[in-house]
Image (cartoon, rainbow, N blue to C red; front, side, top):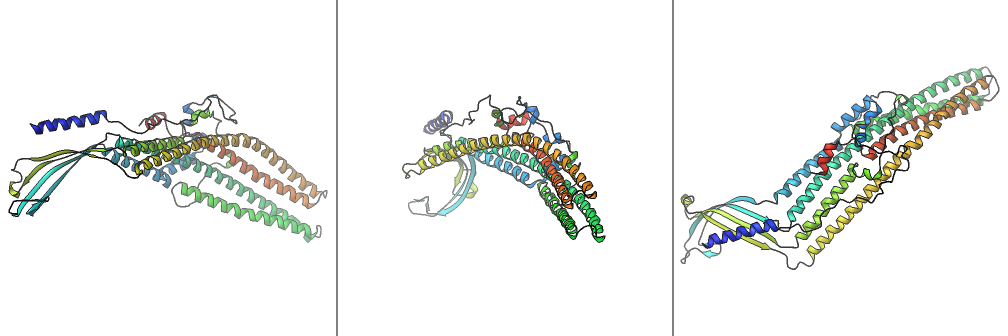
Length: 479
């Protein structure tokens, strides 16, 4: 009768503890900077609303470069940083499984064989005769999550899992952007190498003419020396850009997760097409687009939950223990004896630990404060990167027009200088200067064109585009 009453009381305690249990510590509320909904980016030339469909695409396809598409596909499959990020997701999934298991009872077993005249500190018989004791039990242990310690830990682990998903997306966006940027740098160096070779051919041709005139006594030795200098300068530029091409190919190979090797490219730099301008939307939309911002928010969520874990450790833990099995002095009778059982509860809590538990809570609060600042820094950095990309595109477009005009004028001046020199109107110094200006103008035009391509790449990266579709986003935000 007493046993039944005890069982009912114990069952009532468990039910009440489960039903009335709470989660101590602050609940997480998404932190969003106060942004005026009417605020726009300073250098957004379109300043119109952005729809999700604009960015939920493989934006690199807008460059209409099949070779770039292939390289990005290889990189997304084989890049080592991305594979590491994928492994971290699986690691977070395992950690979540561990913390979820703490919410439930643990079941085990124990078995033992003992002979002696004292067992568990008590004599076996008044005469202290030695006896045998064989036991076999199934065990149960359960710490009831009355204060929400395990639920807060589970909340933190779940948030970290989502953060690892966003972390992979950040690596993915960064990888795509690096491959695209490096590809256009490679096109730029190859074009500059081509210009350098053409300039060397021109200088060698000029040197032959000057050498012939010098041999005939028509020009002075100083003009021959000037032609030789210009030819040497042109010759030095060729291996310089050959080296730059090889180094850029090596860097691109590493991004692809492969050993350094030559990279096949498609159209030349000036045959590439710029992507269309896109509406970037409002700054307030950026926090829902950038995976690094969302990752930082999830890490803040996880850290906030750890405050609850620390607070719960200041309160007593309530546990249930039990075993059910058999005990016998004869091994052969172990399964024949009446069932043996034991069930009980434990209450373990701190009394005085020199403020250790209090300091633990303070520690987690300060870490949460730091995570908040980290989130805010990530947000304002995201805004800065969009602004940088916008101003880069808008100003580089103007610069590119001026550089194009510069090249046309320099080429014409080079042609006129040669004509004037052939007619004896001017010195060879004018020819040298006009050739130098034309050469440098073409190099700068190539570099400016490359910068505009990279500006578009940086803008798509800054906006967080092309990394996820709407259904996948909903699944990550609401796990």
